Image 1 (cartoon, one colour):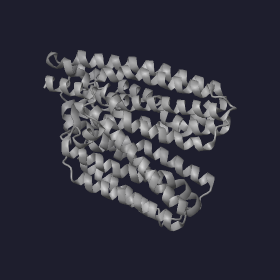
Image 2 (image 1 turned 180 degrees about the vertical axis):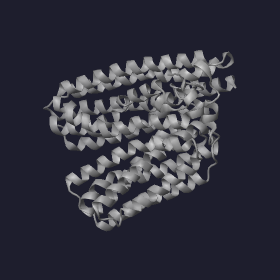
Image 3 (image 1 turned 30 degrees about the vertical axis):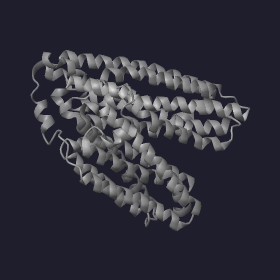
Image 4 (image 1 turned 30 degrees about the horizontal axis):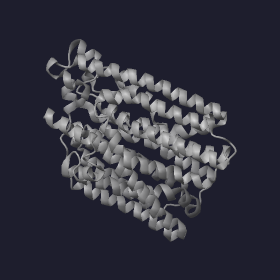
Length: 453
C-alpha cells in the first residue's frame, strides 16, 4: 500500500493525472463521480440564483434597499447554524438521507418564492434556504471524508474545480434571462435553480451510504475513555463545543477565509471608490478567479496531502493575503491602466490565498477532529466560513476601506500574524495527537484518529 501511495503521489507531481482524468476516476470511485456531478448541477443552479436574486427581489418582488439588506442579513445568520446542525444530525442519521433532504428542502423553499408576496414569510423562506444550503455543503464534505479517505485532498480539489465551473455556467445562464428582463424570465431562472436541486437529490439517491459513524457510534467510543485521558481529551465527551483546542482552530479559521470577502466585496468597491479603473474590470476579477481555481486547484492540492503539510501551508495563506492587501494599499488613484493592472494582480494573489485555504482549512478541520465524532466536529468547523460571509463584508466596508490604504495594510498584517498563530496551534495539536496515539499507530496519528485540547 505504501508503494502504491508513493507511486500515486509521484504520478500527480509529474502531472500524469490531469483534471479530466481525475474526474473520470476520482477517489471514491463511482459514488464520488456521481456526487461530483450532483455538485456541478447544484452549483449551476446556485450560480443562476446568485446572479439574479438581488434583481428578482428588487424588480419582481418589489423590495426596497432596507428590506433587501435585512433579507440577505437574515440569510447569512441562518447559514451559520446550517453546518453544526447538519453535523449533529449526521451523528444520528445517514449522511446520504440528510443530503437528499437538504436538496429537497431547498427545492420547496425556492419554488415558494414564486408565489410569496409577504415580506415576513419571504424572510423565513430565504433563511431556511440558506440554512439548508450550508447544511448540504457540510454533508458533501463529510461524504468526501468517508468516500475518498486518505485521498480527500484530491477529492476536495476536484470538488472545488467542479463547483467553480458550475458557478460560471450558472452565471452565464442567468445573463440570458437577465437580458430578457421580464417577470416570466426571472421565474424561469428560479425554476431552473429548483430543478438543479431535484436533479442533485436524484443523483445522491443513486449513491451508496458511505461507511461512517452510525447512531451511538461516537458516544460508545467516547465512553471507552476513562481516568485522566477521559478528563483531558475530547474523545471522552466527543463534543466539539467542549473541545477548547478545536474551538480555537475554528475561531482562527474565520480570518483565514477573508479572501472570499476581499474578492467579492473589497476589490470591486475599492476599484469604484478609490481608482480611475473602468468598471468593466470588475467582472474580470471573478472570471480570473474562476479560471485559476478550475485550472490550478488540483495542482495545489497535490502538494498539500498531509495534516502537517496543511498546517505549514497556513502561513503561506497569510503571506498571500498580506501581499494582496499591500497591492490594494498601493493601487494608484489616478491612471486607469496602472490601477487596472494592480487590481488584477491583487485578484491573482487573493485567488492564490483561496487555493491554499480551500485545502488547508478542510484538511485541518478533518485531521484535528476525533474520528468517532467527526461529523459533529466538521459541523462546527463549517461555521467559520458562514461567519466570515456575514461579518467579512461589514469588516471591509465599515473599517478597512473607511481607513483607506492604511486599513488594507493593517488587515494584511493581522491575517498574516493570525496565520502564524494558527500554524503553531495546529502543529502543537497534531504533535499531541501523535503522542497520545498507541505506539503501533503513531505514524498515522496525524490523520485525526484522536484529538486533544
